[in-house]
Length: 69
Image 1: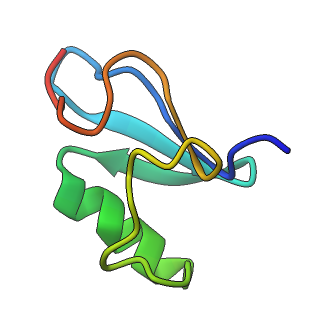
Image 2: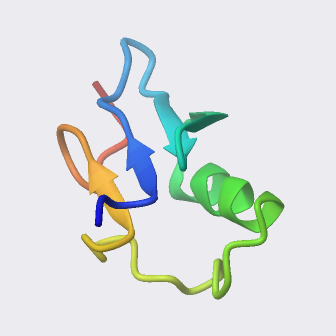
Image 3: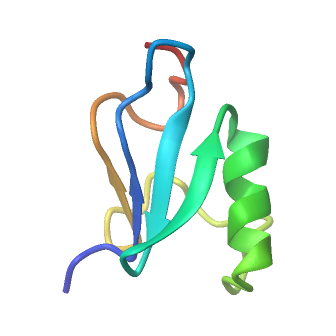
């Protein structure tokens, strides 16, 4: 099964497009933004979900530690 959440490479300004189940959630500029998207879609455990969980997240380019291009 493919990961539900895709976080794309940082753009020129450091923002990363975020999709869940093929739906665009928006542009995250930080982990805080990403977690807010997860809260809005009511992802269980969004507050402390492991962002390195490859069964849930697909990071294109650098992982959750990088928010710059």
